[in-house]
Length: 150
Image 1 (cartoon, helix red, strand yellow):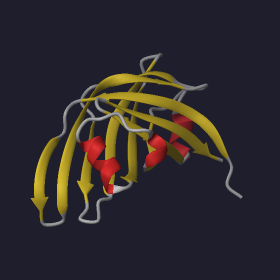
Image 2 (cartoon, rainbow, N blue to C red):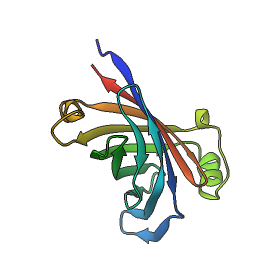
Image 3 (cartoon, rainbow, N blue to C red):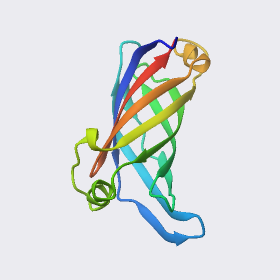
Image 4 (cartoon, one colour):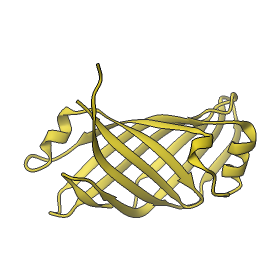
């Protein structure tokens, strides 16, 4: 039996995607992270600018997600977070999202597996866990509700 525990909610402000259309395996999107905030019972503060979400939108319409960001905690510690996941839904819903419209997250699937690299000290417990997240995409923001797998 898998049990989960809330870890944090992250709200990342993102820039417009840089797109390479119609490559040999699909469309590539590079989406810069500009900042934002995250908060949980055991850690909180800010995703730092400079991270990104590198996506491959496959020919079947599924977006493979590869997220790399750093999180600056309220005590100054910097944690590296990797997220691998996928987002997909009905073609019309995904077209609305690509057009920059705000779409109800219940209309599409958005999940990520999250891993962390934290320095010794207060947050090193993150180095020994796997988390999963459910996501929501709005025009200039990505929201992930992350849960620790116990």
